[in-house]
Image (cartoon, rainbow, N blue to C red; front, side, top):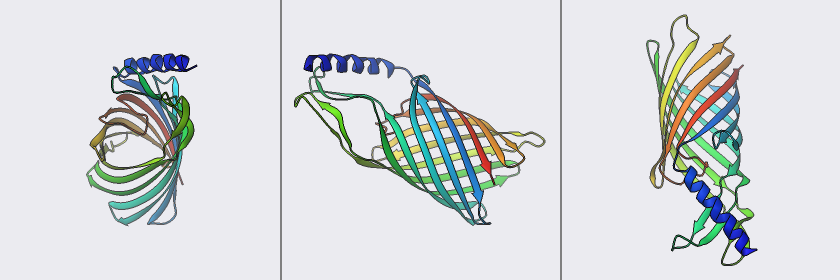
Length: 247
């Protein structure tokens, strides 16, 4: 039995290593709603599905709730909670010789909890809008029982629970063309954790507003990952389709 598990783990590990040599491609499907409660307060609800492995594998489902408060014109603060249901990628840990397997974690679905606090400012320059967003993000992954195989002990063990803090800085530009309903939007976002710059994400796309209540979006994203990432993300080309209802 041990030989079988070892053979399977090594084969899958080499397959993952070969895949890692090239960028992935995925789709992000986003849907949301925004309710304006007053001149200062608004609530938001959003859901998302992400895919990876050239769109062949479901990567993550999520649902989030947020509240936003307008401090003054052009400056607002927001907070939110997101429940994440992840398809965690397979991991193979080798011994110091780099040949023998030490621990193996097959792919499995698991829950994470995410909190965020955001400060956002924007300024109009005619029809050009510039926006700077600073977001603190804390994500906690509960322990998962019996998901990791220890080859020395020949037994299944638990994946430990852990939390992670990330500071996200995003600079965005958008332009409102007169008599044109497709508005271009572009941004660059930097993810900082204990290791430094963990990830960069670049995005460009268009938004289409229908009757001021319906907002459709089409985006292209490229992200470069510099360290271990709890979002199961690597260097990827991503296409996003979104819809938001405002009321």
